[in-house]
Image (cartoon, rainbow over all chains, first blue to last red; front, top):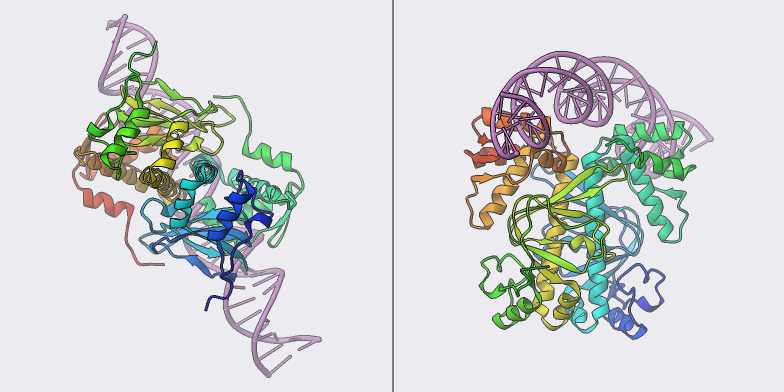
Length: 240
Length: 240
DNA sequence: CGCTTGTTTGATAGCTCTCAAACGCCGTGG
DNA sequence: CCACGGCGTTTGAGAGCTATCAAACAAGCG
């Protein structure tokens, strides 16, 4: 039995400025909250949804973190992305109404469940909600494009630096430290996401650590020099 | 002076089943057509829009083909995707209202210009249009995810085969031959898109040609064995 | 015909993968 | 409290794929 199918409280949620309610009037946020439900918390390795499943809901991360991945014909996982609080999951189902990836909890976490049909109705009534949904979709697209550039044109060191900077920015935007954080994913997940092997991830982290740019303690990451990390990603040299 | 700023004729357009009008009622399609304008044709290497420019319009390809790319801090182009007739360009601007990539004509072609503000209004009035726009955005996201998988986990040969199959499918969907077509892009564009070098593109095409799977004559491609090409992309082996 | 641009082909170097083994953390159980 | 085993991670050595560099080749055009 579902225990926690209670109404969400978007008006009081500290994540609302990153999430669907952004830019809406208080009464509109209440309308939105009325269709959103809190799902029972998920534990490590619980599936939020499965690839191929009919998509009836989008999900917003309330707490914890998630990993989405695609299974190829050989049955191998290929990690597509990670989700942190305030981010929307399930957007890849909008084309055909079925999730084209699976999403799994990387740690204990909770999500808000948004019924797709009700959301579509509400978009017709609240122009600002439609705009914000478009913005979120646009963000997904631009971040996918960034990932395409990363995978197409970056070395292992640059990928690793870029990954750490991306997490730094996202944690920072959430109000957490942008220099000290814990990785919620395994090395294997990072490697798969970056299109390299876990050995290469390990070696690049060791290298950055040896240079003093970061400090690594298991899942714990401390960035000692954000600027150096940025320079690795964007050499800014002028040779064409 | 703009010469061809005439109204678009979505109701008569053979691409409408692939494009924004899909699923709409005839009178709704007329409404849509009333806000869409035909822009003057573009020639090879004409820019449709520039990265960083304010986004006032989305564009649908009417004829020809286009390439979108991102300039990195070193001034190097990184090709994000190619657009064929019926496809929508500019979606990556929905996040911030500015194009995050540039798009350029690969040959003489024409586009339909869709004012973003009018489109948003119309989405509020026509639920089906909002749905279809979501579907198109979802398609962009899933195809970006496919590209992420390709760049993250595929060899040069698999990338080349996958690229040809993708074009085959898209040309087929347009009613053209799915086995014989001309590449509108240079080898350099293909290489950049696939995250490999032009020499590798050339070698892989030569290899596929030597195996008799395809026949290459300059830009002309003929696929002699679609099934073999598919097997290269999806080995379907069962080892985990 | 010569120039420019784009493509193909060849030889070598280098980055990352693969394979292998050691290491460390952490739970369980004696 | 400590031994043990499982899992994830780190480290090392060698191979392989693709990039790089170089030059020949083809096509289009004045």
